Image (cartoon, rainbow, N blue to C red):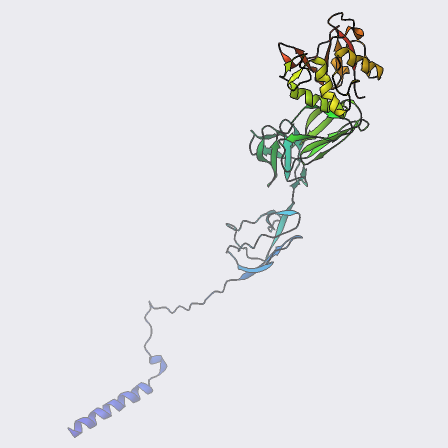
Amino acid sequence: MRNLKKYITVWTMALAVTAVSMPVSAAPSMSAGTEIVQEDKVQEQTYQVRFDAAGGYVSKSVLQAEAGERIQEPETPKRDGYVFQGWRVQDTAGQTKFWNFDTDEMPERDLKLTAVWEKECTLDRSQVTVAVSAQAKVEVKNASSPKVVWRSGDERVAAVDSSGNIKGKAAGRTYVQAVVGSQVVSADVQVTNPYLAQSSGTVAKKRTSRIPIKGLSADSKVSVTVNRSRANAYIQNGQLVIYPKKQGTTKFYVTADGKQKTYKAAVTSYQAVKAIAKAKKAKGCRYSQARRMRRGYYDCSSLIWRCYKPYGVHFGSRSYAPVAASEAKYMKRHKKVISYKRLKASKLLPGDVIFYSYTRNGRYRNISHVALYIGNGRIIHAANSRVGVIEANYKYTRCIKMIARPVK
């Protein structure tokens, strides 16, 4: 057993010596079909992208990108008074185009992208108020193209033509737009329907009168023109305020949101205005000569006297109404007569007193009846016991024998 162990040890040592002394050429060779491949990692080349804002501002002006990849689009640049159109690039052939960040890839070179700007166009106003049937013009400022396309948000409310003229069609709100190249600018439109609460009326000389103007908006623009030698006028709190200086007919021309309305004022004395108001309250009262001074009863001359007496015109009696002929005589004596024959209504003023003769009664100028002219071709008189106090048309009749103006 001892000899066996010795033999194994000697044999092992011999193998070790043999391995150490074996030359390199004796090392086992690779088979013909075996090949060693060395892999080298290729590093991609990066390039610089520079964003030229061309007078504007961009938050990030330089970035790095690898060839073949898509460039990250920066935030939209800003420039006062201009609208950004896109980024333009020049290729190696000198041609320019807009860079498409969704499809274009980074070339194998540095890149410069330049911002393209268009002058920002605006409208000369952002809010338009125009009346029904009136027109207002809107203009484009700084248009980059002579071609402008106009359109209305609601043709039922307002229409706009190719020149930017807006026409009101119905009261309401809408908008208009102007398309200029790639830009769209708009203005809000409000259509009003203004009108005077009264188109005519009787007003007192050297007294302030107010006529409401209806259908306006908070943004309405209203003005008034008048012959300044005859009256003063202005607009205040949606009202036409007038101060007539002379008696007669005065016209006030009110323009509201481009629409003109006319107020026709019959200017007369303050006393005449008050007398007319009392006469209108007497309409419908009964006619009676016997009860002519009682409440609710009138004859023709007591109606005139009772309307004017509270305002200082007593026709010669401070306690009892004279008959029509006596009132006429008083007017003549105090130089209040404006005509001894009929006149056309256009020559009369509200408050004028008209004397008639229907019979030969032996009184002054045979006058038997009197009426009060209230304007607009109308009179008020105590006609007879059948109809009482009524309003009627002024008739251009030969029965008119005198016309007086109690307060000139």
